Image (tube, rainbow over all chains, first blue to last red; front, side):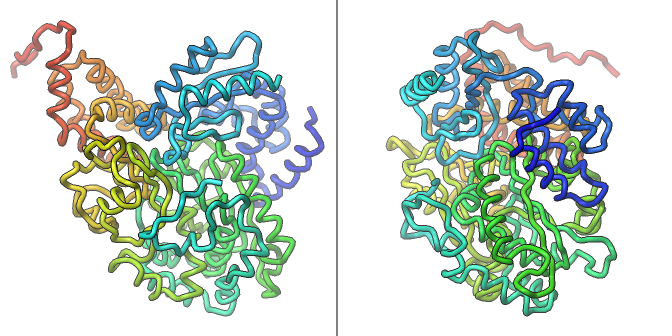
Amino acid sequence: MTFSPELEAKFEKMIANYPPGRQKGALIPMLLFAQDEIGSVTPELVQEVASRLKVKPVEVEEVLGFYTMFTREPRGKHHIQICTNISCMLTGGEELFAHASKKLGIGHRQKTADGQFSLEEVECLGACSWAPALLVNYDFHFNLTPEKLDRLIDSLRKMQ
Amino acid sequence: MLLNEPHPLEVRVLTRRYVYPQAEPIGLDQYVAEEGYDGLRKALAMEPDAIIDEVKKSSLRGRGGAGFPTGMKWSFVDRKSLKPKYIVVNADEGEPGTCKDRVIMENEPHRLIEGCLIAGRAIGSNRGWIYIRGEYRQYIECMDRAIEAAYARGYLGDNVLGSGWAFHLSTHSGAGSYECGEETALLESLEGKRGNPRLKPPFPAVSGAFQCPTVVNNVETYAAVPDIILKGGEWYAGLGTPRNGGTRLVCLSGHLNRPGVYEVPLGMNLLTMVNEIGGGVWKGRKLKAIIPGGSSSPVLRAEECDIPADYDSFAKAGTMLGSGATVVLDETTDMVKVLSRLMKFYAHESCGWCIPCREGTAWLKTIMARLDAGVGTTNDIDMVDQLAQGMLGRTFCPLGDAAAMPATAIVRKFRDEFEAKIASSQVFLPAPNTQPLVVL
């Protein structure tokens, strides 16, 4: 299994950041960056990362179940993550999630039939002073209202 | 860029180079032109013990939540140890209500790099990692660019500014786990494992990353260090109150007119902070309560909020300064719902390592969900408190306490709201059986 030249270069640099023999340290970032490129953590990816870091495949499986950003199923092209934790809840995060769910016709951790959108209710995104906030893939959007969310979804839809 | 319009009551030390509005991060050239890396130059000419003494004099305390004196933490590292020593930055900002570390990384990444270098020099380290939560990909990229620039100009590398001392620094991405903000869980994660906490002692200063002596501090803690070295510990200490040195970033959020991240001296009155800097409670409403140090800190009722915001005053008020998160709740806030949401969070984030936390958070979530839905009983209210008491101090890491403390505080301080919710419920429930099941 090979990745894009940029990612291969990144991995080479990344593994060198850990002490000799402790290259397992690169496991979590490596898996996440690889997932971003190929869309999900496939059984082949587990094998590939395990062999590159000289760990057993089960050591890769162990972390997969622990960290919430990993997924074995491909997500939508635009993965919308809406925070409903305290500061966002106080400023309308839950209503925002309900609005997005209704507009897209999908619930928590579901994907639209055309594969364009997936939705997730997430815990604190560290954007509390600009609440309510959400992430589309890795892009933050702040101080949202249902109207702003509508416009955001419409503009993402046009990007296809 | 995430910047708020400066407020006249702010004391800007850490954020003094920020201009509003700011379009780009402060680059290396501008940073160097405005005293940047001068603290490092000074530190390179100092004895390691003198650096630690200066930090001790500043009475800088950890800005991540626990508030441990930073200089003392550094002094625990045995510099004579034959093992490598490591610097780790905790940028896994995840405590609900907290959004300050991203402001530092986004606006002035070199300040963090300089802080790491000085800390590395103080403990005799040659390697550091900045552990940044996975969702903050844009700040990982921002730090990577700054690190690359610092390498290119000799601030990082095998020969830092020609001193003969090597220091290497890189970012490390998390992948979604609140628990990894706990220092030993973070170290496990850095080693490529599940983020379960370690038994302490040994503390990281003795056995940390890869079983080597390690200093783990929050982003803001490291970011405060360059000015302390440059201008002196006593100057920094003088900005705050005794034993609570300097300034800190506060993250004002919730029902406020002007939420945002602001820099204030330690010891500023909490109400002044909320009413003046934060612009007061929104929509002309009254204040009900403040969660003063992140969601883990016990809530303060409006009448308890007229206190100085420093570590010791907050401890005296039965709460904690935590991470500087200040969540303001207006008079219409449903406290049962607030607690129910928080318990859902802790149940989701418990790593499952310790049974009191794994089971306790799950039960707190279940009981709070039924109380919030109006199908709870008065027994449930007591059970929330009892469960929380059963968790306190009985887990490897503070996540169990973090769930228990707000639960106890909200149930005790706002019990009337819980009872009112039960009384107003339209759902029919049989009267609870008060007879003991077994008579001994």
